[in-house]
Image (cartoon, rainbow, N blue to C red):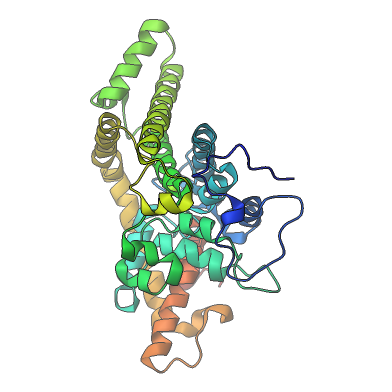
Length: 383
Ligand code: MG
């Protein structure tokens, strides 16, 4: 019924899956990875992505990317590339839609602040938190905790991992210890993520007015395509020219990734997913394109992510997260009962309580965190 004959030998085939943590009967009308994708779409953390942001905070504007629209863009890009490389589209879709589930409110500022708060309690890392969401925190099924996703989807979600954390993750963490690769589908989602945010951040940056086209002309590939568009469509409106330029950049990156990955796959000749895991990274840009992508990233860091107006908001975001964490740690009796650790006496209790607070804060949307902050700190606010 679910013929996978179109897949390359080196793709992730469901019949070679390392399976789920709790064994379940095979799905009847869909593949195992489609079932993963469906479970992700129906989970609570997925709906929260709509109100979480990366660069801008949710209330700053309705047209900026949210983590939800970002994840959908990643899935779109990853699927396009997967189809070209004859990789498993269902798997890349599942990984893409789940890859940001563990993010805190307020983007990187929120994650940095929470990580600092958790320094004495094992730290906070959004990749690991995404895994924690799908493995433990979602409560939707009677017979197991979490979503009970396949090994391959979980492997794709866990992009990076410290050696310390890897040792606690069993088979899933082993590749970080052995310095081996994940499936090509997982490798692909990483780069699809990068293609998506580099380009949509230009778009959002221009829309917000923090970036200008004059500045962007410093980025060689932007300037090249912008001139090309102007030459082909003299007098076209700036709005359309910008979209057309970004569209061409996305296309260039996707095309390069497909071509160069095909070359690498041909050079390594993997016969199955096990060869992939034991081989060198095979999904990669050409050197020239990797350089273009780095230049673009550096530009965004300098002119957008560290723009003083972004810094102002990031500082408020960090302060909000920090104060929420501190007050909850100081007096856990203000926590919703589900997040309380009782008794709260030994060092181990305190450690577990810190982790539950991190789960609570990480699960908050931008606006929920702001509301919670007002409820906890402003006496005139209802609790
Ligand atoms: Mg992402």
